[in-house]
Image 1 (cartoon, rainbow, N blue to C red):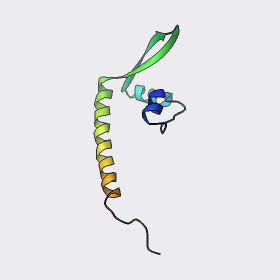
Image 2 (cartoon, rainbow, N blue to C red; image 1 turned 120 degrees about the horizontal axis):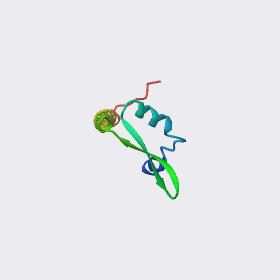
Image 3 (tube, helix red, strand yellow; image 1 turned 60 degrees about the horizontal axis):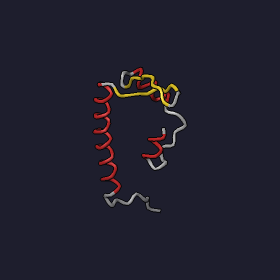
Image 4 (cartoon, rainbow, N blue to C red; image 1 turned 45 degrees about the vertical axis):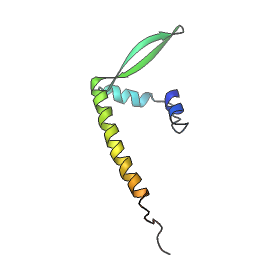
Length: 83
């Protein structure tokens, strides 16, 4: 959550990511393991091979969508309706 918050300049300040991680795990896109740091057990998540593939596909879709939205916004079309 700290990485999301810092990487987004505070725009993605989520209270928890665990519901999303559990859904991704059930879908076989991430797997978890336990590690120990500073005497505390911590759960770590990593992408599976299917997760890596799904991430690449979603990134490509997002780039296409973002490019289309940017093209519309930069087209100079006036979105105001005449009075």
